[in-house]
Image 1 (tube, rainbow, N blue to C red):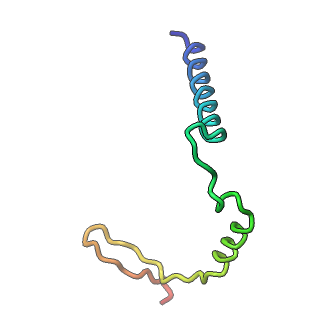
Image 2 (cartoon, rainbow, N blue to C red):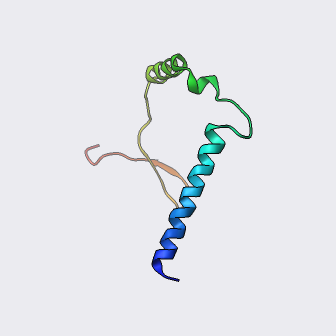
Image 3 (cartoon, rainbow, N blue to C red):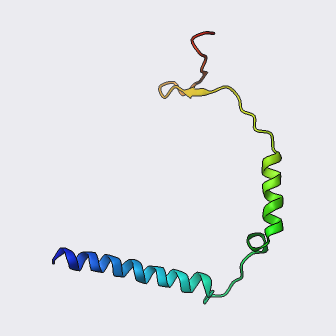
Length: 79
């Protein structure tokens, strides 16, 4: 087979896959609806506010020793 036929077949396969995905997901040929949490802008805004309000705290960095499977706290050289 020549390279042009292989590349053409790959492009055709991706084209068919795209069309099938579009028809199945957007036209919902197998039924179903879009959840209100996806289509409702107010829901998205409230969810973003909730995530931004959470405190972002973390403990000290930890490195796992793969030999003994024990965790050690990493300290800088100045400590």
